[in-house]
Image (cartoon, rainbow, N blue to C red):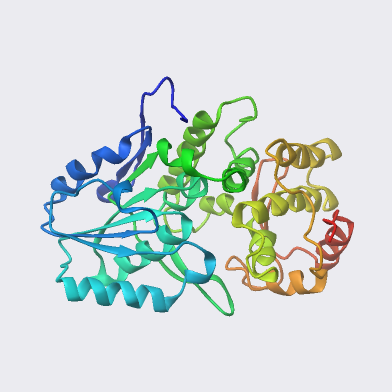
Length: 346
């Protein structure tokens, strides 16, 4: 079992005024769910879960249970519509509660459904994957994909609470645990400090604390919160180019290595800092090279459609004053850096 400090739990506050909430981290924290629901005054609950029914405690209220399926191909407006239709048939009102239980896809889809149902219904997240615990469940970003791009339709909708139960992680296959480390690895370069010598529970805690601080400073992604997209511009392009065969955390890891190389190419960081990017990613057992069979030109075209882009190409890059969003990156530098990246064998 993955324990946090000998079985204790931690609470991280996301300070957003009247939208503030707590992220509870540790073994068994899902048991807090009935108490949190009672505190909302809800009379009914809708639970949308991609996991077995007994993973979500009895909510103490009449409960609609709906099945969700994790995976990027399920992140669609059609899935949001399906959920909202079922909520309406159940008689869920805006004063009731919606609970998500699953990985990042479930968190995103259910969060968006909660944001739009009755123009905003309370949501509580029980993230069950490492990726969802350290990133997707915290911060209130909800979104689904379009054929034109990833996460292009969404809303900011903060949860009432997030319950990161470390016991859920004991069920994950090895690849899924490593996948979640992709988001932890990029934290090394955006203010979390050196996490390499820490046990996994402390890495989770450090990642959540960093994200909570950035969200509190910039809830609507107008500036500082861009740092959380470190490695994501190329990462999202790789996901789409491989039809999501490369998982999100794996793609972000490759994007993090690329971000270091691109920053070096632009003279923003010295060679030892460039090498540090690959060393950190490798430490977690994550891929560091581009996937086989993916063309550089196609990746560049996909990166032009990144949400941060207003014109040209934009990346969050390391530099003398730390990471920052850099717009108008010369295409020749991007193309040259991609060409120099290692590639996985077919």
